[in-house]
Image (cartoon, rainbow over all chains, first blue to last red; front, top):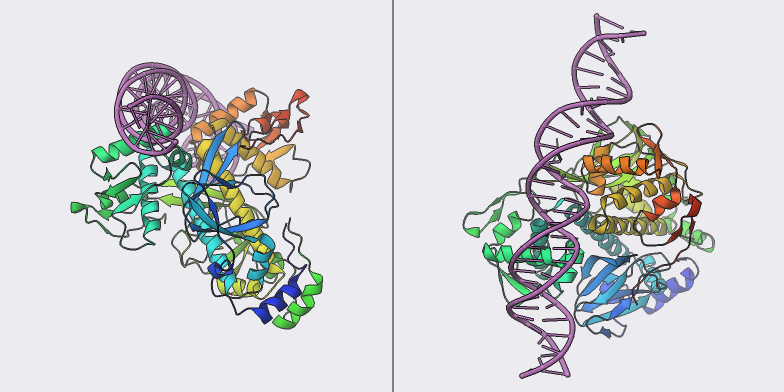
Length: 250
Length: 250
DNA sequence: CGGTATTTTGAAAGCGCTCAACGGTCGTGG
DNA sequence: CCACGACCGTTGAGCGCTTTCAAAATACCG
């Protein structure tokens, strides 16, 4: 568990004397050698002693929990720039495996926490990171709780599309490196339902396959409308423009 | 929970901040007058400018999101001691309403963040809080993604039972102040399914009604086993003892 | 090119949902 | 104290979406 004070003074001294202020969380990991993971290889397992924080440098990682009888729930996919292992429990509460070949850098939890604790630059960044994660988790609860299979798949496509483009214009093509089983376990569906739903979206011309693990977004406006997020869109001609007509109660 | 060393450190911290040390997040709110909410009254709404952080002092609050066509997802119930509004977005991403009469205290987000930022005591507490929230969110994803109706209801009963007793011996009686509709929207079910599932649990003697919004846990061991969390339990005679036989992959 | 894993497709079943009616409880007011 | 009504919870019947079980098709890899 995290005991912040043990070495607080020495860590502070070290930071003050040896290092310039770190501007970004990323720089924290800059000096650490990269490790590589093959496809399917695990980074750590649910129940392992939680000693490190990792930063994904390259590739895609899946984070998942398994309950007794083998049911698997993928709680997230991590891309370059994402961090994993952030928790104060002394064991990991989930497992992490490589979806694609992955490169990561690791820091001991203590080193990470002390560095953040003594950097006024880093603290807000960590805070922001955790807030974003929490917001994403809540969106996922909405998806799992109330969305239909089609809405889930469309939401997933949009999520990945947005993530890949860092938010900008929106990718024409979405890469889905994970298997259908991974998608199913992330979306709370079965592999068959995911497959059928995708087939239907293709038949309707909303997306079109581009290899088995990539899709072209033929009608991005339509796709957006099918996410079930309740905003309304001008869908004429599929050059859809978001009209941001939020619908709250009261 | 998190054992921080308070001592060697605090002298230095006090000098640095020129403020009396706050030992707990709770004390941050100590000087603020309480506000009260009637049953059903809203604290803030999804989309409102997010200017305050709240601490629940008394009662139960529900946190929920609504998507376009009226579907509601309750992402959590908050009890005395819990905090709400923690986010860096400039609008709230969810709404908060009183399930029971509620008392809260508020701090502006800025005041809160600055206080935490200047207190080495408070920072780890906030970090711990957010980590716990994240862990709870992931458990909820598991529930929503892969658990049956019965498992969901049992998990909910256990969750509330544990929360009420602060983790100790386990309450004989569980108070459920929220409506069946609230439970349904939290568990990703309909009100009818929740009702039917509870009826079945009563029929099987797992729980027994104690007023409409409370239940006695007649067979806590059985209840635990029905949560679908995959541990195994000795259920003979219902003086069940947890045998902690975790099941990870590999 | 053969063998394996993954994905797709088909048919049937099941769990939870929808629609509908009934019952119970509580507060109000006569 | 009881009658009434509104709200909430329960129960029932039937349906539909997703799952399950099974098999074929396709991609992947040595």
